[in-house]
Length: 94
Image (cartoon, rainbow, N blue to C red; front, side, top):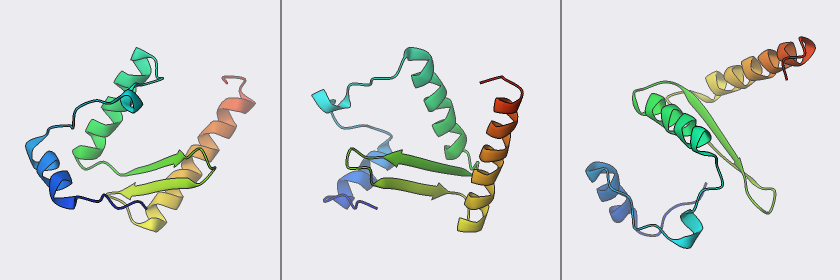
């Protein structure tokens, strides 16, 4: 996991609910409906829902976070995702 250089600034932003000024790297490649869905997921995590977030970096390294879940609960959630996806593929929903 990457650790921010200025943890005090991060904590202040979290407490104040503010974001740093946008840079050219902050531009989203997501469609508007995907942005809205992502925000709904973030809101759910903030209210205490369990989550697993996985991002593959450019160098193919994975960054991940378990939120409000133990590692065992996170693995169980990933299993549920795999099972549900398999069912949808079998039913030609994907």
